[in-house]
Each structure stands twice: as structure tokens, then as C-alpha cells.
Amino acid sequence: MKTLYLARHAKSYWKDQSIPDFDRPLNNRGKRDAPFMGEVLKDKKIKIGLIISSPAKRTKKTAIEIAAKIVYPEKNILYNDELYEASSNTLIKTIKKIDEKYDSVMMFGHNPGLTLLNNHISNHYVDNIPTCGIVALELDKKWNEIDKNTCKFVFFEYPKLYLD
Image: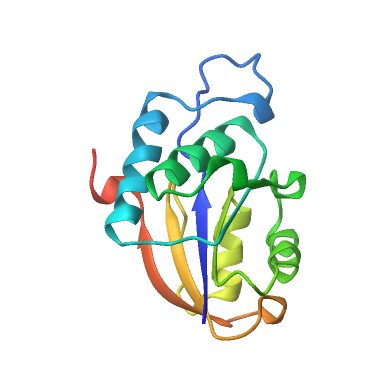
């Protein structure tokens, strides 16, 4: 059984429009939410074999904060340029390339790609994965066999379930 966690980056800073999208940092809420969601996952006793992340600044920071809480070494985070603003098709191609030795993978990325991906591969529709939202899915096939409706919904966590 494989477990895939789809994680959207935490809330980003928009006040300075001169900052290129790729370089946008987390805002104060994002800086609060990322470690908080890491604690939520830690409480669920989540163990991750591989973290793959978009290299965008806000996504990287979210991955690093959550990795620290679930005791995943920051140096082992794999940054993949293709995940920046990736379509659901690109995300599926990335998943299909994951080494079979990993039973549990967390992918940090962006919307709308992540939400569209969930709604394609999962048996559970999600209207929107909000910032710092995490969907957990199970797959009883190989990574390269992931396809439409091949994943079973496990949980959907996001900061507003807990925080204002």
C-alpha cells in the first residue's frame, strides 16, 4: 500500500507586487500555518519516505517547516522544477516516476494543479485545497499505475479546521 500526501504551500506575501511570483515568501499567517500543520501530521504519526517539492520560495519554506516537525531531514527534500505551477498531468507524470522503494510520499506544490490532481486520482472530490492544506490518499498499486480514481481518500487537513 502506497500513501501520497498532496500539500499546498502556505499563505504567501502579496503586499510587494515587485517580487516575482517564484520568489514570493510566506506571509505571517503562512509562517504560523506551516509548522502548525507539521504538528498536525506529527500527531497523526505520519512517516514520510520521500518529500518532493516545487522550488518556489513559499513552497520550499512550507516543505522545510513541515519536514522539521515530522522529523524528515531537510537535506533529503527533492526539489523538482516541473512542480512549479504544474498541471495535474505533469504531477501525474512526476508521481509515475517515483521509485517503488518509497511507500509514503509527500508532494508540495501549487493550485490549481494539486486540487485537479486530487479530483482526478481520488475517489473523493475536493472543491479546493486551501493554502497549507494536505490531502492523504492511499494507492494499492505501483506509483507508475496511478490513474483516474485509483486512490482512496484517507484525510483532508487544513489550518482553518483548527485556527482562525
